[in-house]
Amino acid sequence: MIGLAPSEIRQRIAAAIRTLDGWTESRWVYDLYPLETSSLAHRSYAVGVSSSTPVDRDRQRRAVGVLMSSSVSVRWLHRVRADRQVADYDDALDSELALMAAIAKIDNDPDLSLRLDSIPSRSIVGDGTYLLGELSFIVLHRYSLGG
Image (tube, rainbow, N blue to C red; front, side, top):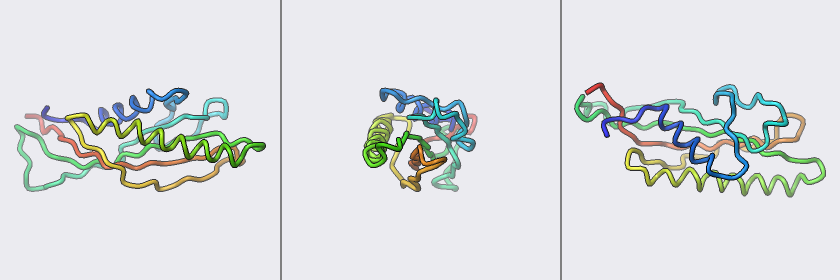
């Protein structure tokens, strides 16, 4: 494998999440998510590849590509009902673990190496009916230089 495009990384992570029952990829791109109606928002997600940096700027060969470190984030929504706030909040936190476990399976992929970088935010949004969470990963992969 000479290279893996950022779009392929995004697609592989989105596909890993789709293996979980009840989760739907947003029709909105990561930077605009969540802009969905409430009927579509529960257990929805968006994946973004915000940046990529060469691991070693001096070792770039056209024949083998360049080793890159890409920042990938997943934003997700989980409903929090007024009459079950604490229970739904706990369900949302459990869903976060399920998302991480599904994404972690990608680390068996020979084309990339993935590690959890942080969980930068978990917050109740809108009128208090959704928990918006975010997971950030660092992905090591080769990027083709056209060789």
